[in-house]
Length: 249
Image 1 (spheres, helix red, strand yellow):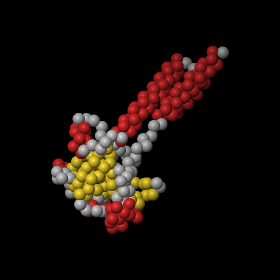
Image 2 (cartoon, rainbow, N blue to C red):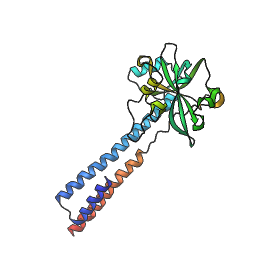
Image 3 (tube, rainbow, N blue to C red):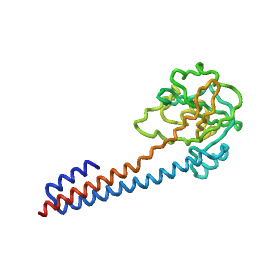
Image 4 (cartoon, rainbow, N blue to C red):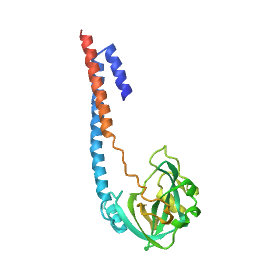
């Protein structure tokens, strides 16, 4: 769009005319619409951030409550949740990630529930050198546990073409493909809980994985984008007026 504005400005300086006036009007409407759209997006983002903050401060819900909320069409992302079960550490999966500049992985581990279903839990981050469970055996405890964290929704597809393809054969993931994780872990579709749980920062024995890794700093740059579009509209108006005044003289 900035390139189109430059082209119109050049034409306005060379030969103002009816056709050019129409082109300038169309471009101006588009620029103003984009600026207004960004302001609307800013309001939506601020509302979303406030809603997420309110959810995070709510008491932990049960899995049944979260699933009912999802079934009713409500958003469950970042909703606190507590769930009990037994980890199947032998079938953990690895999501490529960074933490404080360190390259490593989020450890997604199947949690076997009392009703026979399985919930995948993001237990937290480990550096690349600790990907092998043998290097962090203290955190691979057996027996029933209760995990508290934030519910996260299942992704329907890869979020962007720039994201690398997952490598299920290596248990390595670049986007959260729950169905692929479940297939590798031998979890049948009717036994899979259709959401994730990001564990909170409660320390694991031995310190690893390090929980509380949920990304909550959603960018909100819409005001800057709005100023950019409105600024381009202002430039277009000023240059066009100057060009037509020059032509009139």
